[in-house]
Image 1 (spheres, rainbow over the protein chains, first blue to last red):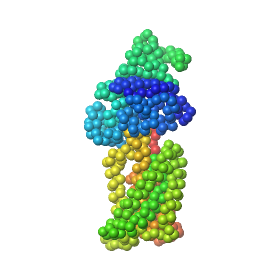
Image 2: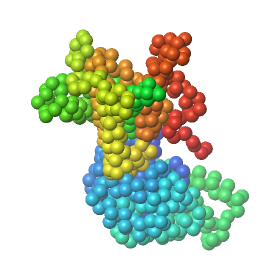
Image 3: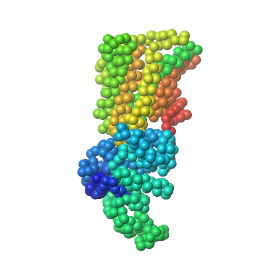
Image 4: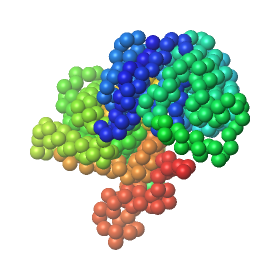
Length: 263
Length: 303
């Protein structure tokens, strides 16, 4: 199990990004992490994958652990080797390399099994197989997202941490990304799905957390979150009690004010 | 015509050495985004090591082979030295401003050269290149053997580097890290070892270049100055392009040779040392037309 407990993250010795976050990703489950911009979602992922250092951040309190083993001082490449992979926000494919070269870099830690892993990733994302010799920068946004996920799957990770995989994608593409997430999970990979698209995230997750200004404010099974009035208002954009009816713009203002009160 | 061809070959010869030096600069720049001013010191170190190794290896079959073995050993040793220096003096600074790191490399350069100077002595040390500045007749042209050796070396080294970066997994990881360091880290690439490898490669290349440069007049304390000619070469070719480094180096060598051959007859008013200035003039012209160099990546950004 991948877990953080009472995690506090500080950037530049001055900016407090996470204030006492506890979260668990059990094996083979999908956990959704919701929250608006600046809530601390990406900081949490960085803490889990050893990338805080790159951004002058550090864990000042709390624990980050994989099966009870401390990860706070572990270097990023060691964390990848132990089976925790992050797909960063904005896809971050190596645009000048070909699709296959991107995937090969993804398999850097498991070089002995590159060809079997390539087969597996190509069957998971058939569109990548068609484009294998193409330069990654010329792929569409959705294809690049698939490449980024496929690249992470090259080391057959135990946990896959996805940072906003639906960002900037067309609704149809979001659906196929969601299907792939379910498929990856079905083969035994635990998933942390960080999303602003709450509808998509909660439709596949087993458990969900809501993060606001560096704190976990809700921690419930996904069905319970879907039924939660606050989540329905703030993340799904629905009137309480009025299923599927979009609120008018005038009301939005009211809700936004209310959210600030509650935060 | 034969005068022109001879000048051309002379230029391609010294240009090959500039290319080796430029490759070192570019490899470090691509991996770390820093221009390492320590390259001249590694060049001097390599040349001095070779000058000590050749006599020690005098026993090997024939003279050419012992020189080859000495240069290879010197390259490996210098590469190892660069590796250690990167680990000790540069790695702790990763993440700091590029300018700061560049100044540190300048300090490393001076420190290493002071130490190495102690092993040179006052005059020039002979490098032990068996043919000196002997020439051979080839197709009616008289060509210095050392220029042929230089060209051969850049071909071999260039092919080896191409194979390393295109075919080997670690070379691929280095290219990936050059595009996006953080993304490479999430792939399990150890960025530390990418930095270390780039320094080791650059050190080894500089050592080979230094040894080859010293084949005419031996190793003296001023040899390192020649490494600075690699700067117009890399800026000409584009800071982040390996092909550009090779072509830039060759271009600088050829321009230098042609100017020194013809300038006295056609433009004597330029004075005696126009050949030294020529690479920089060429650099200026190229930068006016293509500010990112001939093969560099233009900084294009969508905002």
